[in-house]
Amino acid sequence: MSSLRRQSPMVSYPTNQRKKAPSNSNPLNRLPSFLKPGAAVEISTNEEGFRGAWFMGKVVTVPSPDKDPLNCQVEYATISELDGSKPLKEFVRVDHLRPALPPMSEMEKKRDILAGEDVDAFYKDVWWEGTVTEVRGGDGKFSVYFRGSQELIQFRRDELRFHREWINDTWQPPLDEAEEEEEESEEDEVDDYTEEYLVPQVNLETTRAVAKEMFSIGTVVEVSSDEEGFVGCWFAAKVVERIGDDEYRVEYKDLREGNGVEPLKEVADFLHIRPPPPSDEDIDFAVGDKIDAFYNDGWWVGEVIESMKDGSVGIFFRESAEKMRFGRHGLRLHKDWVNGNWELPLKRGEVKRAKKVPFERNVRRKKAIDKQYFNIGTPVEVSSIEEGFEDSWFLAKLIEYRGTDKCLVEYDKLKAEDGKEPLSEEVNEFQIRPQPPEMVMVNPFEKLDKVNALYNDGWWIGVVKKVLAKSSYLVHFSKTDEMLKFHHSQLRLHQDWSDGKWITSSKVCF
Image (cartoon, rainbow, N blue to C red):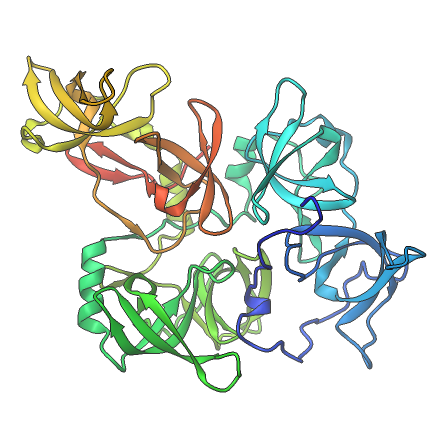
């Protein structure tokens, strides 16, 4: 950001699909009401390195329905022509513009900015989207993380504003919403589609075995990608080659190589391939249904947010925060391929009922372990009651039982004071549990997922506060009030051991 060049490429979503030439059709149903000559606007760009940047400017000319219905001319407020003589003017797409965000209200100026909050930071005459990772007590500044450039920069309070999105001709969150406690607003917001469905849990070995049995050469499949901007999208393809035990070379039905002629071929692992889901042509979609919408040659995951009398439905796409309207054709109920079976996702109402009572309140008080699960030498995980180590679990093995409620364990990674021998420690029986079963996440973690993060040789309980680029996340740890960055491979979905069973608590409620 020091030179206004950021390192991550622009993200492409349903309205800007990969490996396809831009459509010549007009996506605009009407000219946005804010687009008038002289109107103050904020301008985004597709130029690499500037994702999340908003430049200030004003409208010079509006699109012409006859000549150029997609672009309008703008004049930048802080960028000049190369010779520096006058402000830069250029033509930009209408969907890269939004009205200038009004200054913060007096109420917002008094509101605290918290760690984990999304903000816009004013840097070198541009507003950049970022996330607060630390509220510094000494100098009163805020550390803001920018996922595009992976930079952490300090800002004064007056250089920040609360982040908002311009969606369907309105600001989200609304400008006139009451400034409530974050806990209340997170639970009550209807427009936040981050907690509607639970993440499917997949058994690694079962999924691998099913893939080996089903996906022979020539099999028609659907393929997904972890590439940023395409998470949750499935493309039709067929298997053309098996590579080892875990990977397959596929040929896409609709995507093309760079020459625009040959079908695109890629290698995908068994976790990103599935058969086409069964048809459900006679189903009527209702508000709240999780669906797949076919757009630009792929099936994109969205949610029905409105149903029209003409049979069309309004769809909200979480990844891009976009709203689009579709007819019945090209929609299907979303299904998850889990351990060789098709499963419908848990509906919104069911999630909310489960979230009324925090998970911890449903778990019985700690008691001595059932020794049928723990033979001498069994790998276990050990929690600590020492201050500063709460909510952490360390890998160990059971050495011996001592008395009626204690046992001796030997840690795998922790060392004794000599730094050589493994640390052995006597702990209470309720402090040990089996190792959790391995679970593979079909989709990336989402905001508010309760996770365990591998840090300093232990698994620490935290909550995902921000999804970053390149399969990384910001995780908040409530006991220490710290925010740290982790890669997907360093996280696992949180599980609790209760009455001889593993119970998954995928979301945190406030």
